[in-house]
Image (cartoon, rainbow, N blue to C red; front, side):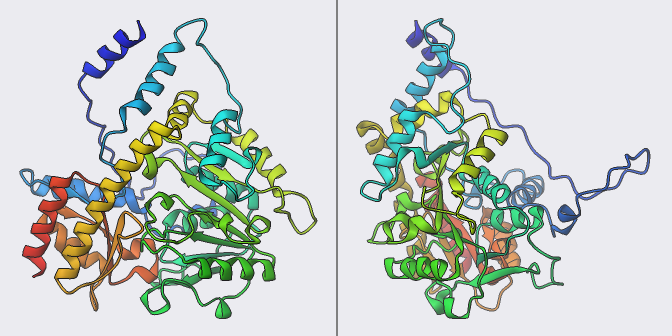
Length: 437
């Protein structure tokens, strides 16, 4: 019966996602409440980066309705989720229609079996226990929950460039000051410069102490995976200063060399680091939504109280747990068969990245990333990143992301995503060579 229902579902045509238009700043002239606007939200300089990219795509399509636009901007996966994974989700969902298969609320911290599988699959021999793993609806949501955990009175350091959610959530929580003119920097946030001149790792000898350090490896957007020596420096720096590292390993599955895939490979990290990660780019769950965080028992506040207790309270207060249907799919991803199949999709994107790296390198451009990450970070010396974005979109109908969307350190760069169908990657390569050669 379940298989017959599943067959009917799979025969249904896919619906196009509804269009979303970014709302520009406006003010109502009629009736108003007496509630003041959150002053921290007033500090945000613009719309969030990726809806802004989508808005520009819509404008371009309206201008060139017959153009074939190739989307190498927003890092959204394109290849189908392996069928064993979707079958497990469909079977679980259809089982909810039966007395035997129905389940209601699950544990806020996540399915016990999935937590155990995550600990054994990604943290074997690192001392991570299943009780330290919290299953979520994605790394980005977990970043916000961690910010709630830390509160507004902490000082924060971020890589520059870095994923914009770290900075925007810091501003919203009140951890920052105002935007400093046209610099692209917020007051009271420490921007750790990470570029080709310093091997994409900050000079910690010149970095002031902060309570919290956001660090992503492989980095989004540069694609650089920190070495073992670099991460040991980071952990030692945090221990010396009594700081907490929030380590984002969402792209660890793309690491091809000996770079660590988890901060917990580094001695001492369990005393200073929280790790967040995701099924989005590892298993194609960008629209399905599933992730996890690890909060070690040894991580404590200045008063000696365990951080994990407070994080558990945040999770139980703000979250009813990840979808049980999605968790069934996550568990299948970590099975022997499922893991092999999702890894093959990751390998497909890595091959795409190699094509893009070779394309830009053949044009004499300085290219970073692409070897340990699905992103290629391309330097256009002397050019403004939004100008490069606009020219490529206008003349080739290819969407990228301007580097300054990831912070002031991204000026003169664009980020190009390797998420795409192979024929589109090859076509993009031809168009880019035609424009830039």
